[in-house]
Image 1 (cartoon, rainbow, N blue to C red):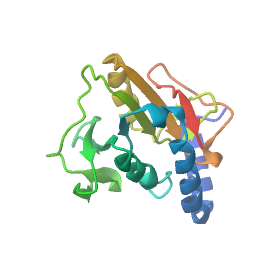
Image 2: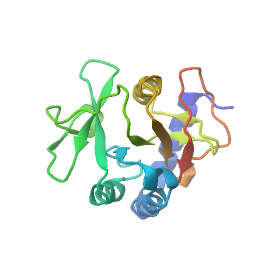
Image 3: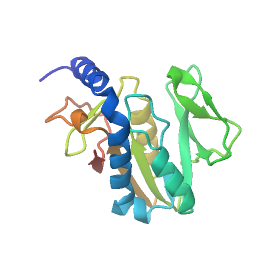
Length: 187
């Protein structure tokens, strides 16, 4: 089996080669996400602002807002390995932040981890996934740390969906104890 870094490099190259097909695939994947039971039953969506080689969730976020769901997107806490999620809507101020990723204003409503009564859907990007939910991130650990904290807060209903392009699904991944497994992978 390849190492995590070897897999990251291989997937990065494959995504770069497939760049022209990614926007159309993003739209198809977003429609699949909207059809999931986890989406239909949630009232709170933790999404993300996509890099060029990630599934663009704009369509899901727009639909979630139209459907009356709360939408939050991540912001990296400067000089740390932490991130927080902040409320997003059509009036949100978004600026290029850490790692060239669009981020929300930190003055907005922060998603609080403590004992939430909402049905929460977390859409998680990754470099690679397995069909059974193993995830390989970009190597910084932001999502594993945040999701671990979220799971420890024991929300009423939490669904973790890994979101990726089909070429990012691999047969197996090396995992460690701190790696958080997805409930489902949509590609």
